[in-house]
Image (cartoon, rainbow, N blue to C red; front, side):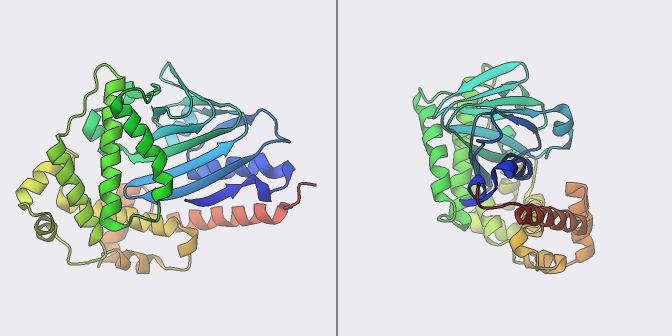
Length: 334
């Protein structure tokens, strides 16, 4: 995990506003109100593990409101699983209230409004999970949000414990190993979410979930290879193309669509990454296996509703805004 923001290096007068800007970009857009602006403290850490994006943050007491306006602009391909690490957190969504203490889990949908209240000494880990992958296991999730999943039963205790370990694993598991772990984590969370609601039940068999993980790992291990095709993936997993596509059909995809989606996701991540701002869009696209820039731009726009060059412009604008805010802040609190 790497620190994306800490109030320790920001003047007291700017701490909350700076935190709010970073939190909206790294987690989800929202309105928030701290218990006390002058004494407000917070820190945000980010990391990746396979298909999971992790955001861990601690903050002083505050209220958060993710409105309908925010929900309309939220990313539609992600669901949020909150794992409370320390302190207390109260979540409200779809008319339900989940009171979380250390060890508890709960699901939130950023496409729906929600409110949250953070207590003293609160530390929360948020797992950003691909919506398609979780819903392939449990079905539509609208009726599953804002339930407090307590680590009482063996399955829920395992889900909670593994989730808490994830920040320590970022950067240590790479390639196919990271993919395998992230998919097993989603399996565990799906079981816990299924147990916490009356109608939800995990829908994908253990065998198919295992092969799905292997297919994903085989694809990600070879994404930069322009010659990657369905036969190469099937051979790497040890199954036929037909069987691999049968498994992927339960996730509403196929080998070809999965390869394209993963390449697009890696390209978007690279274009938005400030540390890769020096790379051209063509360099990034070619580096992740695309051989035709026109095809890349067209499929990118279809997937995300925005052209690659416009994503790069937005990323540059946000980075300049952060640098400007840094320049206006004083590392001394006095």
